Image (cartoon, rainbow, N blue to C red; front, side):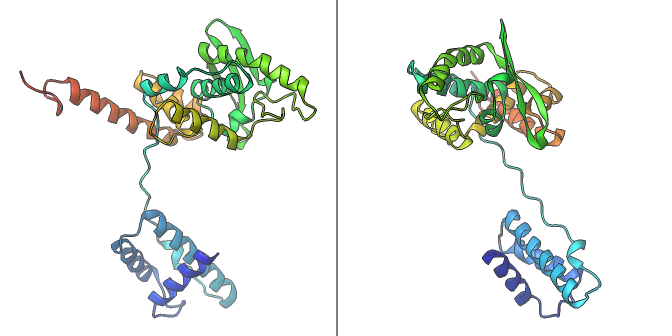
Length: 280
């Protein structure tokens, strides 16, 4: 609210005209001035959103017929390249030694499931034992509830399935040992309740540090790694879109930029005329 008031106050101070006299041209000049000041696109978007709310207020209170803020567009913010792990870094993370106890078995299973399925952390935290189909030689299947309560199937690789199977006896024992248990949840906290998304963030962060990986990786970083590695190894974009549960293909296309950057690095290193090559 404080930021909103300041944005509106700054806008009004920059406009000598009354609200009725401000048109699209004045708004465009204001937006250009903001960009020339070096403001990030996201900051300009926020300020324009505040001004639009201001114009709606003026229109409702004073009967201003037109809203010029609807006629201008905010600058598009550059899409951030997602932070992800290389395949070698994933191997270091999943190759760690885990204690054969409740916490060790659980944490290994969480990491394997996140990377194997590419599911969101909330989807992983929401998994129930009944959502899993285990037993296939090549792995199993997890049924997750994604955004918009849309259900989709995610694939559990053989390693992920093995980690889940190793976790289940510890889970069953904890359910017997506590009266505060959630018998339906796949992943439990120390009290036997469903493990929260917040604690899954800590699981990923702590073991990433333990693996000596300097990047700040969250469960979403494992999701990014999942998608990037699939594309690097030749998966088509539509398949990755379906596995990720993206409603729009454009959302998935960010990973093509990541993969192309990786391809460029490999090309420059390996091709005789690449930038990183040397002539004999």
